[in-house]
Image (cartoon, rainbow, N blue to C red; front, side):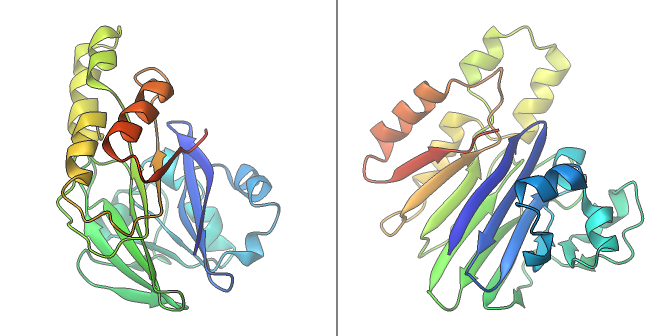
Amino acid sequence: MTFTSLASSSKGNSYVVSDGETTLLLDCGLTIKELQKRLGYNQAGITACLVSHEHNDHAKAVSQLLKRGVPVYMSEGTAVSHKEDMSLAKIVKAGVSFEIGKFWIYPFNVFHNTAEPLGWLIHDKRTDETLLFAIDTANMNVIAKNLDYIAIECNFQSELLEESYTPTLLTERIKKSHFELEKLITYLKKLDLSSVKKIWLMHLSSHHTNEMQILKRFSEEFPCINVEICPE
């Protein structure tokens, strides 16, 4: 199983998981032209797209992908909330697994300011590897076992958010809808990380995070795990 970040910021988010035969696009928060460019103009290689929620920086290219025949999976809440026609989308529910190629996929609820946002457990039946993917969430209550990879949001650091000139209402919205560094570390400590090979940190705020400080904290708390920050 491979994981690749195409874009990871408030400007747009999109990631690729592949086993060499089946290739999944996780979120598509770029224009279709930019998405094609970052895919190396190989859109035909995308088997399906999984969309976490309807916000533009995660779902911008949904309608274009559907028009091009790419199966797109999302919750009913995401489909209803999307501004464009989602009648061709494949509706999935938290707690109800499904399969795409050799990938077994388990959607789960996350905590964001949208209707039915989802995270994904993706298991590669060929290699017996499992990825936990969660973005745009203020917390997590999924205690997954036998994880090999984790791709998860680390959106802000409390002290940097408080020290910024961010308006009060926006500050409160960020706190209620995005994962903070120390809260993320607390969550990860609840998991069995003994088999985790790598953690990718996604969707860092350019104003409310310091990459060096974050990597230092992770090296202190999880010294045996390879941690990488996904670039914008």
